[in-house]
Image 1 (spheres, rainbow, N blue to C red):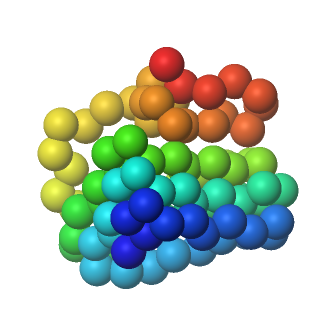
Image 2 (image 1 turned 120 degrees about the horizontal axis):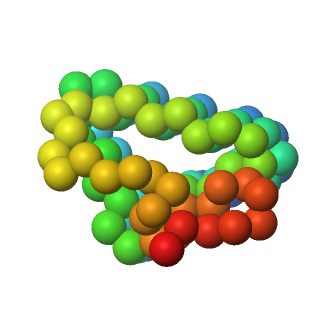
Image 3 (image 1 turned 60 degrees about the vertical axis):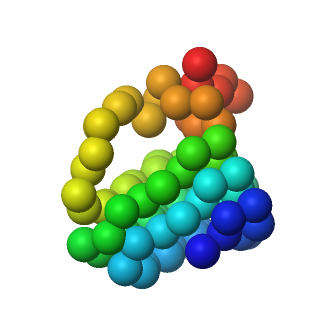
Length: 84
């Protein structure tokens, strides 16, 4: 969907799809929450960035090699600290 692209908004961002490709892309909500629902599809975020001024909620299946989002490069916790 956003491979190498950007979806950035000041307010809440909510995306519902059947799978989501954010490889090398950016999806961000500057001031509010970010909600990603990939339905029964896979969420791919290799070298991508997910940012939110508040909460980030993700739903995707199947979950392959689950990791903690707060330890991922490109993950912004909204408190000025990013992932490792």
